[in-house]
Length: 557
Image 1 (cartoon, helix red, strand yellow):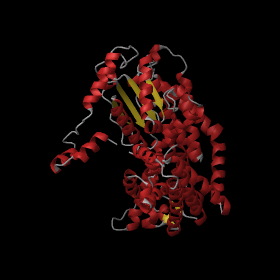
Image 2 (cartoon, helix red, strand yellow):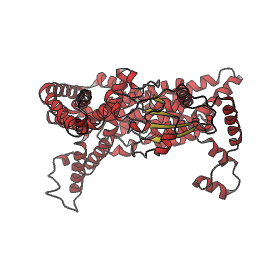
Image 3 (cartoon, one colour):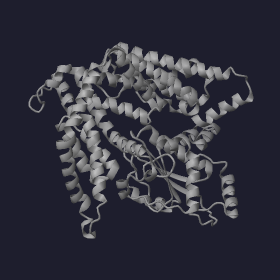
Image 4 (cartoon, helix red, strand yellow):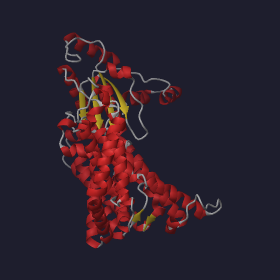
């Protein structure tokens, strides 16, 4: 993704110099720097390189600071960052990106932010510490826009700076929903309610997923070691024998159960946080804990988080005297909001939601035959449509929610979701192996990596292929995912781990049939994508075909 680095690597003749380049000890040469600087000087002389709408000639490049984040904080966050940085280099714009990923984030240097001419937010969850960017022209979009059209975002940022459009992004803006990407750069104040709601929910899911992964895998490992009856073992604090496998299994089970106990409160707390920032954390967590108390489960956590965020947003709009503002977020808002949310969850909405949760559980447990197959098809289509995007996350969150109170039906859903999510990268890997000539060199290299990504249940491994040829790749992998989801449900495969791919096969119920379902979906998706790409290549071999191949290389790279 860094053309300067790849060009320098290809041009290298001295092994020591190439090794130094890879280690980062030697900067790649930039043969076009002189031309870029000349272009900047020409634009400055003609008055076209301006910042802040002043029209004054500038000798320094246009500066942009950007923030990227996605619900899981893994793939899309860093892909968007790379895409924006590469587009900035191509446009002669200085782009500095802060990735707010799952491993935390390193804040941009305040001096860099102060010197920036514009700001780009490419995010699907709340940008943290928004106040740093106050007073700058702002382009506010979803994370996929940062991946797919970075040059457009940079151009829009420059136009806003030239017009002198100033954003008022502060931490308090979260109370009104400001700053959620709606994909058009307008910010969430003008976004549709559904866009804001999705962002709030994804904020909660992004913080919940690590608890699910840690707790679910520990519980699944405990069952693999000690059997399902280990769930009823005595507390290891009272009885633990170092040399007994069952004691270790009980330990893993009880640690995993403790992690799982936070699932609903964390979901509720961070949905509220996404709506109204830190003052909403306390009522959100309180509401999530009450949801568990009244047996409202995952649905109760969703409602509790939304209620907590809404109550805090309402309290924040009440005008107060300046002397009270200091204690509002620490004392007054958590106190009032927790009392209101607690009342609503205990007295008003808790029991109806618990009834709905029980009905959903009974429905899942009663699924059989064609109904189970239809649900598997729907989940498979959702998992493969956007490969880590909103629909994929909704299906995954639905499956994960069932693990909070596992039943045979919810375990089948989890199995179908993970199986279908493995299909897109595995299918692209197989397609690049059996019909290499249909793919570019870059795509074939991506295909080798996709074997591991698919086996690990990282659906995003197919994104480079979908970005390069969406009309052929996406329908193909959706068909394969639907087949896998349907077969997994029909076979009655179950899964207690929320992640892991083939590495958790020993923890899967009906493992051989489960692998068969994945293989069938992968073959279907591979056959379709090969057929569709072959049909295009068998058209008249005009120059346009080569041009299409060239465009694929550019997009995939």
